[in-house]
Amino acid sequence: MSTKPTIRTVLGSLLTAGMLAGTPMAALADGQAPFARDKGWAPPVGDEPYGRFLIDRLEYAAGDDEDSVNWEFQGWYGGDYNRVMVKGEGEDTVSGGSGGEIEKLDLLYSRLISAFWSIQGGVGYQLEYGPGPDHDRGFAVIGLQGLAPYWFEIDTNLRVSDEGDTSMDFEAEYDVQLGQRVVFQPRLATSYAFDKVEEFGVGQGINNVKLGVRLRYEIKREFAPYIGVSWNRKLGDTADMAEAEGEDTSDFRVLAGVRMWF
Image (cartoon, rainbow, N blue to C red; front, top):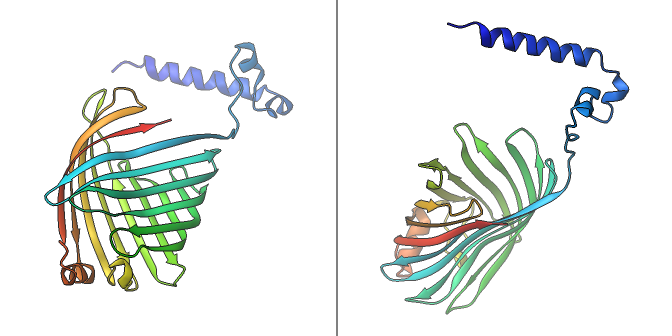
């Protein structure tokens, strides 16, 4: 085995240590050492505010009985540590029925607490509309969002409604890079209710499980059409309440949509 990389690494470390040792503390006060200035390096980037708006899902979902347009977005503005975020998710029935739902619309403050995790808190809103009376409610929200080991993207929240009922939601997704532009993404979502809320068709316990897979092609990093499938299964008391109303407890759909960000 060659020793050249090791020698090069040691010499590089000694050179860097020597330059740092000879650097006055005043020169490092602005984060820019003299040797970096001599080389014309750009100064370190501070915690400058910037923003991004991601439409993670904008898709047409074709099912056996109904077709819908589903959407999910996430936008934020701020620095690396402190941000203001808005998140939204919902669907609108466009064929085979009418109505829809804003499943969540959250306005949150986000604080980075470790390299890959942020704690978030704020307020949320939910609306169900359709042929019958509309129902809506507000929430206090606290949650965690970040990257779990092996790069699973996790988003989970605890919600307390303005009526005092409490629930939790959990979502995980994973990007499998199949090529330079092709990404395969499995997704899992579920929710748990600590209280029964009849007007929203929510029973106590685990409400549902949603599974989906999507295959997207990144024409640009900012714009990627995709195809996929999804399966939603209501569980427990929530499934019993749906059956009593004559509704299906499972739903399979074929998807086509686009993911884009600005």
